[in-house]
Length: 216
Image (cartoon, rainbow, N blue to C red):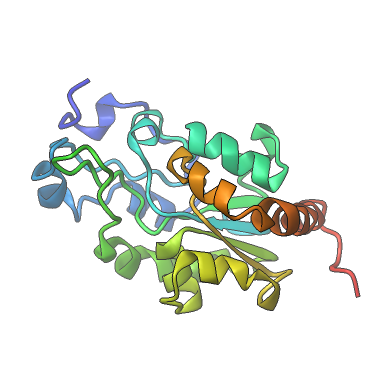
């Protein structure tokens, strides 16, 4: 597929719930930036939130597969994240309960070595605060990766340090590493994540999804 083709020739975004979501879906702020990457692709914002959601997943940016499908975390990273959260695909994609708001709504492209480029800061500056205001009260914020940690927590600490300090922010906020399969070595090196963080995370997710109060 020619990634420079117009958005209309990709699978269309449907069921956009509000004017803000439609404005984001039509955004072309990064057109020149994306056409200058190794992928030379057109902007294709992936918008997946609805006011009133209980759980926020703040990620990094869509990858190539998500750019093509128009569905966030529609890739192996998403499979791992759903396992971490203890959510089925139907629950994960239920926009009445789950808002998925990355730090950049578009696939940033690849660099010359084939690695994902970082999310362009202009996207978060333009849209992220507006989305958070529109979402209103969120019962649980799940912050995936360093870019989300920095925006939501104001933290410039290394990802491992921020995740290791999870108890200071639970049960309302859980900072996580990125679920990319490139981080498999990190998970082996830090077994406390699976042993300590994931059980608490899954319990918090289930309480919010089932609309139950936090334990006293």
